[in-house]
Figure (cartoon, one colour):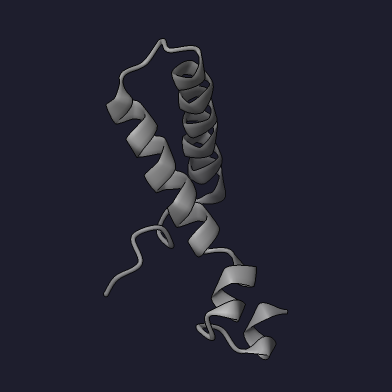
Length: 67
């Protein structure tokens, strides 16, 4: 399965992260619909899942790859 997030550069990921944070804040003050909150939860879960720490805990990356 192709990792579509590997093709994104860091600037794009940061931009999407910023949009995600803005969505969270907007949702908390009830300015955005529930679908925006769902998008934010999904995106945040994906970003957490792809971190080296979580990948290491799941045994997806060996110690040498983490360095």
